Length: 88
Image (cartoon, rainbow, N blue to C red; front, side, top):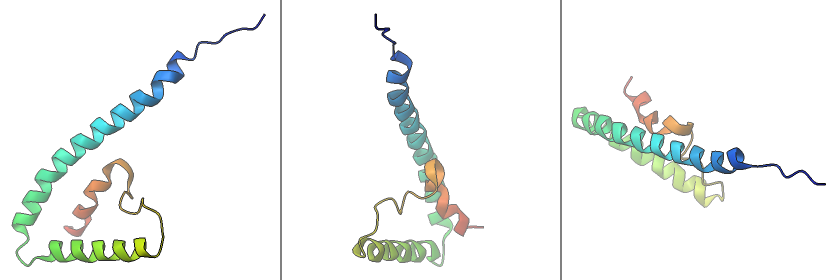
């Protein structure tokens, strides 16, 4: 006789992990948007906008060279807080 194993926990762990990851990412973007709005309001000289434009131009060159798509998602879940390093 063959033993049938129940793969229920494994079956539901991947979608639940993806759901939790999506909810955490949405919450971090919600917080980050408010912090970014305050940072942009305090940016008198326009340094943040210039750095953002320079980073996007570098990304376009990187993509034109045929490299991967995951370049902007560096930093994992809290990669959206990467711009805060420029404020310190």
